[in-house]
Image 1 (cartoon, rainbow, N blue to C red):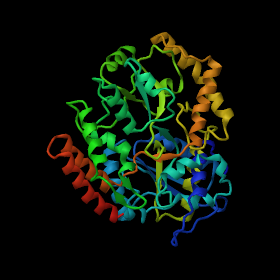
Image 2: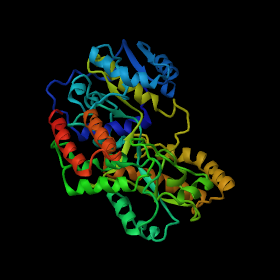
Image 3: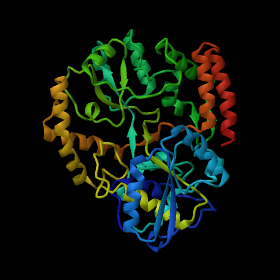
Image 4: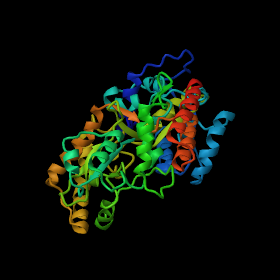
Length: 447
Protein backbone atom coordinates (compact mmCIF):
# COMPACT_ATOMS: atom_id res chain seq x y z
CA UNK A 1 0.00 0.00 0.00
CA UNK A 2 0.97 3.56 -0.34
CA UNK A 3 2.90 4.67 2.68
CA UNK A 4 6.42 3.40 3.07
CA UNK A 5 6.78 3.89 6.78
CA UNK A 6 10.14 5.33 7.44
CA UNK A 7 10.64 4.54 11.03
CA UNK A 8 9.16 1.16 11.54
CA UNK A 9 10.54 -0.54 8.50
CA UNK A 10 14.13 -0.42 9.57
CA UNK A 11 13.81 -2.88 12.35
CA UNK A 12 11.77 -5.58 10.86
CA UNK A 13 13.64 -5.88 7.68
CA UNK A 14 16.94 -6.86 9.07
CA UNK A 15 15.58 -9.61 11.16
CA UNK A 16 13.59 -11.02 8.37
CA UNK A 17 16.61 -11.68 6.24
CA UNK A 18 18.91 -12.59 9.08
CA UNK A 19 16.70 -15.27 10.58
CA UNK A 20 15.33 -17.78 8.12
CA UNK A 21 12.08 -19.41 9.15
CA UNK A 22 12.29 -23.11 8.48
CA UNK A 23 8.90 -24.05 9.87
CA UNK A 24 7.03 -26.51 7.67
CA UNK A 25 3.65 -25.15 8.66
CA UNK A 26 4.16 -21.47 7.89
CA UNK A 27 0.76 -20.00 7.09
CA UNK A 28 0.06 -18.62 3.65
CA UNK A 29 1.17 -15.04 3.12
CA UNK A 30 0.10 -12.60 0.46
CA UNK A 31 1.54 -9.61 -1.33
CA UNK A 32 0.13 -6.42 0.20
CA UNK A 33 -0.57 -5.00 -3.25
CA UNK A 34 -2.95 -7.90 -3.90
CA UNK A 35 -5.12 -7.18 -0.86
CA UNK A 36 -8.45 -5.46 -1.53
CA UNK A 37 -11.37 -6.02 0.86
CA UNK A 38 -10.29 -6.98 4.37
CA UNK A 39 -11.11 -6.27 8.02
CA UNK A 40 -8.36 -5.90 10.62
CA UNK A 41 -9.11 -5.95 14.36
CA UNK A 42 -6.63 -4.43 16.80
CA UNK A 43 -6.48 -4.86 20.59
CA UNK A 44 -5.51 -1.52 22.11
CA UNK A 45 -4.94 -1.59 25.89
CA UNK A 46 -4.56 2.15 26.45
CA UNK A 47 -5.32 3.97 23.19
CA UNK A 48 -1.62 3.88 22.38
CA UNK A 49 -0.65 6.63 19.93
CA UNK A 50 -4.26 7.46 19.17
CA UNK A 51 -4.84 4.39 17.03
CA UNK A 52 -8.43 5.25 16.22
CA UNK A 53 -7.40 8.55 14.66
CA UNK A 54 -4.69 7.01 12.50
CA UNK A 55 -6.82 4.01 11.60
CA UNK A 56 -9.36 6.41 10.10
CA UNK A 57 -6.66 8.15 8.07
CA UNK A 58 -5.41 4.78 6.82
CA UNK A 59 -8.91 3.66 5.84
CA UNK A 60 -9.51 6.93 4.00
CA UNK A 61 -6.38 6.33 1.95
CA UNK A 62 -7.08 2.62 1.44
CA UNK A 63 -10.72 2.04 0.43
CA UNK A 64 -11.79 -1.52 1.08
CA UNK A 65 -9.82 -1.82 4.34
CA UNK A 66 -11.84 -1.77 7.55
CA UNK A 67 -9.92 -1.39 10.82
CA UNK A 68 -11.74 -2.03 14.09
CA UNK A 69 -10.01 -0.84 17.28
CA UNK A 70 -11.04 -2.76 20.38
CA UNK A 71 -10.05 -0.40 23.17
CA UNK A 72 -9.64 -1.66 26.74
CA UNK A 73 -10.33 1.78 28.20
CA UNK A 74 -6.87 2.08 29.66
CA UNK A 75 -7.41 -0.93 31.95
CA UNK A 76 -3.87 -2.17 31.54
CA UNK A 77 -4.01 -4.83 34.27
CA UNK A 78 -7.18 -6.35 32.85
CA UNK A 79 -5.50 -6.49 29.43
CA UNK A 80 -2.45 -8.25 30.92
CA UNK A 81 -4.63 -10.85 32.60
CA UNK A 82 -7.28 -11.49 29.97
CA UNK A 83 -5.80 -10.89 26.53
CA UNK A 84 -3.63 -14.05 26.46
CA UNK A 85 -6.71 -16.03 27.43
CA UNK A 86 -8.60 -14.76 24.37
CA UNK A 87 -5.75 -16.03 22.20
CA UNK A 88 -6.08 -19.51 23.70
CA UNK A 89 -9.87 -19.36 23.35
CA UNK A 90 -9.64 -18.44 19.68
CA UNK A 91 -11.37 -15.07 20.15
CA UNK A 92 -8.33 -12.78 20.02
CA UNK A 93 -7.96 -9.80 17.70
CA UNK A 94 -5.76 -9.97 14.63
CA UNK A 95 -3.14 -7.51 15.91
CA UNK A 96 -2.38 -7.11 19.63
CA UNK A 97 -0.03 -5.12 21.82
CA UNK A 98 2.38 -7.72 23.17
CA UNK A 99 1.79 -6.98 26.88
CA UNK A 100 1.07 -10.16 28.79
CA UNK A 101 1.93 -12.63 26.02
CA UNK A 102 4.64 -15.13 26.89
CA UNK A 103 5.86 -15.36 23.31
CA UNK A 104 8.85 -17.46 24.41
CA UNK A 105 6.49 -20.25 25.42
CA UNK A 106 5.97 -22.98 22.77
CA UNK A 107 2.27 -23.16 23.60
CA UNK A 108 1.88 -19.45 22.89
CA UNK A 109 4.10 -19.59 19.82
CA UNK A 110 1.78 -22.22 18.35
CA UNK A 111 -1.00 -19.61 18.40
CA UNK A 112 1.01 -16.68 17.03
CA UNK A 113 2.16 -15.88 13.52
CA UNK A 114 5.78 -15.34 12.56
CA UNK A 115 6.18 -11.78 11.29
CA UNK A 116 9.12 -12.59 9.01
CA UNK A 117 7.28 -14.23 6.09
CA UNK A 118 4.59 -11.54 6.33
CA UNK A 119 7.17 -8.82 5.90
CA UNK A 120 9.05 -10.67 3.16
CA UNK A 121 5.85 -10.83 1.12
CA UNK A 122 5.79 -7.03 1.03
CA UNK A 123 7.37 -5.88 -2.27
CA UNK A 124 8.63 -2.71 -0.53
CA UNK A 125 10.41 -4.66 2.19
CA UNK A 126 14.05 -3.53 2.12
CA UNK A 127 16.60 -4.77 4.63
CA UNK A 128 18.68 -1.60 4.47
CA UNK A 129 15.81 0.31 6.06
CA UNK A 130 15.91 -1.58 9.37
CA UNK A 131 17.98 -2.20 12.45
CA UNK A 132 18.80 -5.81 11.65
CA UNK A 133 20.45 -6.30 15.02
CA UNK A 134 17.22 -5.48 16.86
CA UNK A 135 15.37 -8.20 14.99
CA UNK A 136 18.15 -10.67 15.73
CA UNK A 137 17.87 -9.83 19.42
CA UNK A 138 14.11 -10.39 19.41
CA UNK A 139 13.86 -13.65 17.47
CA UNK A 140 13.08 -16.98 19.08
CA UNK A 141 14.35 -20.06 17.25
CA UNK A 142 14.65 -18.05 14.06
CA UNK A 143 11.11 -16.66 14.22
CA UNK A 144 9.87 -13.21 15.11
CA UNK A 145 6.72 -13.49 17.21
CA UNK A 146 7.05 -10.10 18.90
CA UNK A 147 7.52 -7.24 16.46
CA UNK A 148 8.98 -4.09 18.04
CA UNK A 149 8.63 -0.71 16.43
CA UNK A 150 11.06 1.02 18.77
CA UNK A 151 13.78 0.02 21.20
CA UNK A 152 15.94 1.48 23.93
CA UNK A 153 19.39 0.52 25.17
CA UNK A 154 20.06 0.24 28.90
CA UNK A 155 22.52 2.85 30.11
CA UNK A 156 23.98 3.96 33.42
CA UNK A 157 25.66 7.12 34.71
CA UNK A 158 28.38 7.00 37.36
CA UNK A 159 28.86 9.00 40.54
CA UNK A 160 31.57 11.56 39.80
CA UNK A 161 32.00 12.51 43.48
CA UNK A 162 33.55 9.19 44.53
CA UNK A 163 37.39 9.26 44.52
CA UNK A 164 38.80 6.92 41.90
CA UNK A 165 35.47 6.44 40.16
CA UNK A 166 36.31 8.42 37.02
CA UNK A 167 39.56 6.48 36.64
CA UNK A 168 37.67 3.19 36.84
CA UNK A 169 35.20 4.31 34.19
CA UNK A 170 37.48 6.21 31.81
CA UNK A 171 37.83 4.58 28.43
CA UNK A 172 34.99 2.09 28.91
CA UNK A 173 32.64 1.73 25.96
CA UNK A 174 30.27 -0.50 27.95
CA UNK A 175 29.91 -2.23 31.30
CA UNK A 176 28.48 -5.47 32.70
CA UNK A 177 26.71 -5.95 36.01
CA UNK A 178 29.61 -8.09 37.28
CA UNK A 179 32.07 -5.31 36.36
CA UNK A 180 29.95 -2.86 38.34
CA UNK A 181 30.21 -5.21 41.30
CA UNK A 182 34.00 -5.33 40.85
CA UNK A 183 34.20 -1.53 40.84
CA UNK A 184 32.18 -1.46 44.05
CA UNK A 185 34.62 -3.91 45.66
CA UNK A 186 37.71 -2.06 44.45
CA UNK A 187 36.55 1.33 45.70
CA UNK A 188 34.93 -0.03 48.87
CA UNK A 189 32.45 2.84 49.03
CA UNK A 190 29.66 3.18 51.54
CA UNK A 191 27.33 3.72 48.61
CA UNK A 192 24.79 1.17 47.45
CA UNK A 193 25.59 -0.01 43.93
CA UNK A 194 22.69 1.59 42.09
CA UNK A 195 19.62 3.72 42.64
CA UNK A 196 16.38 2.41 44.12
CA UNK A 197 15.73 0.20 41.11
CA UNK A 198 18.51 -2.14 42.25
CA UNK A 199 18.02 -5.43 44.11
CA UNK A 200 19.07 -9.06 43.75
CA UNK A 201 16.39 -9.87 41.20
CA UNK A 202 17.19 -6.72 39.24
CA UNK A 203 20.89 -7.62 39.09
CA UNK A 204 20.17 -11.18 38.02
CA UNK A 205 17.91 -9.94 35.24
CA UNK A 206 20.87 -8.18 33.64
CA UNK A 207 23.18 -11.14 34.23
CA UNK A 208 20.82 -13.96 33.30
CA UNK A 209 22.69 -14.88 30.11
CA UNK A 210 25.68 -15.84 32.29
CA UNK A 211 23.69 -18.54 34.06
CA UNK A 212 21.14 -19.71 31.49
CA UNK A 213 21.86 -20.89 27.94
CA UNK A 214 18.43 -20.59 26.35
CA UNK A 215 19.58 -21.93 22.99
CA UNK A 216 20.92 -25.18 24.44
CA UNK A 217 18.42 -25.21 27.34
CA UNK A 218 20.96 -25.55 30.12
CA UNK A 219 21.57 -23.62 33.34
CA UNK A 220 24.49 -23.16 35.73
CA UNK A 221 23.03 -21.74 38.92
CA UNK A 222 24.60 -24.23 41.28
CA UNK A 223 28.08 -22.72 40.92
CA UNK A 224 30.40 -20.56 43.06
CA UNK A 225 30.06 -17.76 40.48
CA UNK A 226 26.29 -17.57 40.89
CA UNK A 227 26.42 -17.90 44.67
CA UNK A 228 28.97 -15.10 44.90
CA UNK A 229 26.97 -12.92 42.49
CA UNK A 230 23.67 -13.04 44.37
CA UNK A 231 25.46 -12.70 47.72
CA UNK A 232 27.15 -9.52 46.53
CA UNK A 233 23.91 -8.24 45.04
CA UNK A 234 22.10 -8.56 48.34
CA UNK A 235 24.94 -6.96 50.30
CA UNK A 236 24.87 -3.80 48.18
CA UNK A 237 21.08 -3.51 48.08
CA UNK A 238 19.36 -0.88 50.20
CA UNK A 239 18.43 -2.62 53.51
CA UNK A 240 14.75 -1.67 53.31
CA UNK A 241 14.46 -2.43 49.59
CA UNK A 242 11.39 -4.43 48.60
CA UNK A 243 12.36 -7.16 46.16
CA UNK A 244 11.30 -7.02 42.53
CA UNK A 245 10.79 -3.33 41.85
CA UNK A 246 12.69 -2.71 38.66
CA UNK A 247 12.29 0.79 37.28
CA UNK A 248 14.50 3.50 35.87
CA UNK A 249 15.42 6.47 38.05
CA UNK A 250 16.92 9.45 36.30
CA UNK A 251 17.12 12.64 38.34
CA UNK A 252 18.06 15.91 36.69
CA UNK A 253 17.25 18.13 39.63
CA UNK A 254 20.61 19.25 41.13
CA UNK A 255 19.35 18.89 44.70
CA UNK A 256 18.22 15.32 44.14
CA UNK A 257 21.47 14.52 42.34
CA UNK A 258 23.37 15.88 45.31
CA UNK A 259 21.36 13.69 47.69
CA UNK A 260 21.80 10.59 45.52
CA UNK A 261 25.55 11.16 45.20
CA UNK A 262 25.82 10.31 48.92
CA UNK A 263 23.91 7.04 48.41
CA UNK A 264 24.59 5.44 45.05
CA UNK A 265 27.54 4.40 42.94
CA UNK A 266 25.62 4.28 39.66
CA UNK A 267 22.33 5.62 38.40
CA UNK A 268 20.23 3.84 35.82
CA UNK A 269 18.99 6.24 33.17
CA UNK A 270 15.54 6.52 31.68
CA UNK A 271 16.23 4.83 28.38
CA UNK A 272 14.26 7.32 26.30
CA UNK A 273 15.67 10.54 27.77
CA UNK A 274 18.27 12.27 25.63
CA UNK A 275 19.31 15.00 28.02
CA UNK A 276 22.07 13.45 30.04
CA UNK A 277 23.23 10.37 28.20
CA UNK A 278 23.11 11.87 24.73
CA UNK A 279 24.12 15.46 25.50
CA UNK A 280 27.42 15.71 27.43
CA UNK A 281 27.18 18.47 30.02
CA UNK A 282 29.99 20.03 32.01
CA UNK A 283 31.76 18.26 34.84
CA UNK A 284 29.75 19.74 37.70
CA UNK A 285 27.07 17.12 37.19
CA UNK A 286 27.03 14.65 40.06
CA UNK A 287 26.19 11.71 37.80
CA UNK A 288 27.71 11.58 34.35
CA UNK A 289 28.67 9.19 31.58
CA UNK A 290 27.02 7.37 28.73
CA UNK A 291 27.75 3.73 29.47
CA UNK A 292 25.65 1.04 27.77
CA UNK A 293 25.08 -2.05 29.88
CA UNK A 294 26.05 -5.29 28.17
CA UNK A 295 25.85 -8.97 29.05
CA UNK A 296 28.92 -11.16 29.41
CA UNK A 297 28.85 -11.78 25.66
CA UNK A 298 29.26 -8.05 25.01
CA UNK A 299 25.73 -7.56 23.65
CA UNK A 300 24.05 -4.27 24.52
CA UNK A 301 20.93 -5.00 26.56
CA UNK A 302 17.83 -3.46 25.04
CA UNK A 303 14.14 -3.27 25.77
CA UNK A 304 11.76 -3.10 22.82
CA UNK A 305 8.63 -0.99 23.15
CA UNK A 306 6.03 -0.70 21.81
CA UNK A 307 5.71 -4.08 20.15
CA UNK A 308 2.98 -6.26 18.67
CA UNK A 309 2.04 -9.91 18.24
CA UNK A 310 0.00 -11.31 15.36
CA UNK A 311 -2.79 -13.83 15.84
CA UNK A 312 -1.84 -17.07 14.09
CA UNK A 313 -5.45 -17.73 13.10
CA UNK A 314 -6.01 -14.46 11.28
CA UNK A 315 -6.29 -14.46 7.50
CA UNK A 316 -3.25 -13.89 5.25
CA UNK A 317 -4.91 -10.71 3.97
CA UNK A 318 -5.37 -9.32 7.48
CA UNK A 319 -1.75 -10.14 8.30
CA UNK A 320 -0.57 -8.17 5.30
CA UNK A 321 -2.71 -5.21 6.34
CA UNK A 322 -1.46 -5.46 9.94
CA UNK A 323 2.12 -5.09 8.74
CA UNK A 324 1.27 -2.29 6.33
CA UNK A 325 -0.73 -0.39 8.96
CA UNK A 326 2.16 -0.48 11.43
CA UNK A 327 4.45 0.89 8.74
CA UNK A 328 1.93 3.58 7.91
CA UNK A 329 1.44 4.43 11.57
CA UNK A 330 5.06 5.44 12.01
CA UNK A 331 5.49 7.34 8.77
CA UNK A 332 6.61 10.81 9.94
CA UNK A 333 4.55 12.31 7.14
CA UNK A 334 1.48 10.94 8.93
CA UNK A 335 2.53 10.86 12.55
CA UNK A 336 3.62 14.44 13.21
CA UNK A 337 5.07 14.38 16.71
CA UNK A 338 8.25 14.82 18.67
CA UNK A 339 10.22 11.59 18.27
CA UNK A 340 11.83 12.14 21.69
CA UNK A 341 15.05 10.55 20.49
CA UNK A 342 13.66 7.07 20.98
CA UNK A 343 15.44 4.86 18.42
CA UNK A 344 12.70 3.68 16.10
CA UNK A 345 13.60 0.55 14.23
CA UNK A 346 13.79 2.14 10.81
CA UNK A 347 15.17 5.56 11.65
CA UNK A 348 18.92 5.79 11.59
CA UNK A 349 20.49 3.99 8.60
CA UNK A 350 18.60 5.80 5.85
CA UNK A 351 16.79 8.82 7.15
CA UNK A 352 19.52 11.12 8.39
CA UNK A 353 17.81 14.27 7.02
CA UNK A 354 14.64 13.50 8.97
CA UNK A 355 16.49 12.87 12.23
CA UNK A 356 18.68 15.93 11.80
CA UNK A 357 15.60 18.06 11.16
CA UNK A 358 14.07 16.80 14.40
CA UNK A 359 17.27 17.45 16.33
CA UNK A 360 17.61 20.95 14.93
CA UNK A 361 14.09 21.64 16.19
CA UNK A 362 14.54 20.13 19.67
CA UNK A 363 18.16 20.50 20.78
CA UNK A 364 18.18 24.30 21.29
CA UNK A 365 15.24 23.98 23.68
CA UNK A 366 16.93 21.21 25.66
CA UNK A 367 20.16 23.17 25.99
CA UNK A 368 18.31 26.32 27.05
CA UNK A 369 16.21 24.42 29.60
CA UNK A 370 19.16 22.86 31.37
CA UNK A 371 21.22 26.01 31.23
CA UNK A 372 18.51 28.27 32.65
CA UNK A 373 17.16 25.86 35.27
CA UNK A 374 20.26 23.98 36.42
CA UNK A 375 23.25 25.89 35.12
CA UNK A 376 24.38 22.90 33.07
CA UNK A 377 26.02 23.63 29.73
CA UNK A 378 26.92 21.20 26.97
CA UNK A 379 30.62 20.77 26.26
CA UNK A 380 29.67 20.98 22.57
CA UNK A 381 28.27 23.77 20.48
CA UNK A 382 24.69 23.43 19.28
CA UNK A 383 25.86 22.10 15.92
CA UNK A 384 28.31 19.70 17.55
CA UNK A 385 25.60 18.51 19.95
CA UNK A 386 23.30 17.64 17.04
CA UNK A 387 26.05 15.69 15.29
CA UNK A 388 27.00 13.97 18.55
CA UNK A 389 23.45 12.75 19.15
CA UNK A 390 23.15 11.51 15.58
CA UNK A 391 26.38 9.53 15.94
CA UNK A 392 25.29 8.09 19.30
CA UNK A 393 22.02 6.82 17.86
CA UNK A 394 23.62 5.59 14.64
CA UNK A 395 26.11 3.53 16.60
CA UNK A 396 23.25 1.40 17.90
CA UNK A 397 22.91 -0.06 14.43
CA UNK A 398 26.49 -1.34 14.46
CA UNK A 399 26.63 -3.30 17.71
CA UNK A 400 25.36 -6.67 18.88
CA UNK A 401 22.14 -6.43 20.89
CA UNK A 402 20.33 -8.74 23.29
CA UNK A 403 16.79 -8.68 24.63
CA UNK A 404 17.13 -7.54 28.25
CA UNK A 405 13.91 -9.23 29.29
CA UNK A 406 14.38 -12.55 27.51
CA UNK A 407 12.73 -14.67 30.19
CA UNK A 408 9.85 -17.07 29.60
CA UNK A 409 7.15 -16.48 32.18
CA UNK A 410 7.62 -19.91 33.76
CA UNK A 411 11.31 -19.22 34.44
CA UNK A 412 10.71 -15.62 35.49
CA UNK A 413 8.22 -16.75 38.12
CA UNK A 414 10.64 -19.34 39.51
CA UNK A 415 13.47 -16.82 39.74
CA UNK A 416 11.20 -14.23 41.36
CA UNK A 417 10.03 -16.69 43.99
CA UNK A 418 13.49 -18.00 44.89
CA UNK A 419 15.17 -14.60 44.86
CA UNK A 420 12.47 -13.19 47.14
CA UNK A 421 13.10 -16.02 49.59
CA UNK A 422 16.84 -15.33 49.44
CA UNK A 423 16.35 -11.58 49.79
CA UNK A 424 14.25 -12.10 52.91
CA UNK A 425 16.78 -14.49 54.45
CA UNK A 426 14.52 -17.56 54.28
CA UNK A 427 17.09 -19.57 52.31
CA UNK A 428 20.87 -19.40 51.96
CA UNK A 429 22.62 -18.54 48.71
CA UNK A 430 23.58 -22.20 48.35
CA UNK A 431 20.01 -23.36 48.86
CA UNK A 432 18.74 -20.76 46.35
CA UNK A 433 21.30 -21.90 43.81
CA UNK A 434 20.35 -25.58 44.17
CA UNK A 435 16.64 -24.82 44.01
CA UNK A 436 17.04 -22.71 40.87
CA UNK A 437 19.25 -25.31 39.22
CA UNK A 438 16.65 -28.05 39.68
CA UNK A 439 13.53 -26.05 38.85
CA UNK A 440 14.87 -23.98 35.96
CA UNK A 441 16.43 -27.06 34.36
CA UNK A 442 13.01 -28.73 34.31
CA UNK A 443 11.37 -25.56 32.97
CA UNK A 444 13.96 -25.31 30.18
CA UNK A 445 13.21 -28.89 29.13
CA UNK A 446 9.57 -27.90 28.57
CA UNK A 447 10.39 -24.99 26.27
